[in-house]
Image (cartoon, rainbow, N blue to C red):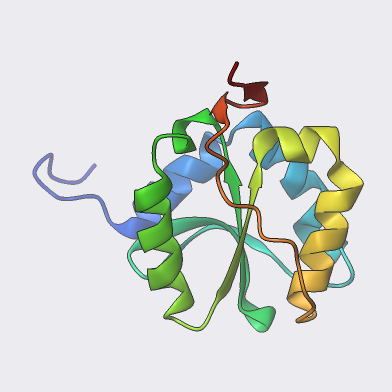
Length: 137
């Protein structure tokens, strides 16, 4: 074991995130691992631009992020993160966790379209949601 004073490396953080994946991350990974989605090879929890990205197709320079309820209050942070990752030449697309569970096929189709350079409907973090899937009254 290393020194308790050593700062964690991005790869250490990424490994920890892979070992503690959310249910949504595990669901998506089961459908994209092993190049089973249109032959696209994805990696998960990859450091890019000082951030750890959920899923990355390096050959297509595509980052896929899954956002849970913690992102409702993090729109400004997520916007900065997106700009920095895109400044590295990546295209970043986001999905709410419940988008994945409610419309898995649509999410997978959108990922393939984005990887092939096609248009995708942006998925901004809506102000009307307070938590995943719940609408404000």
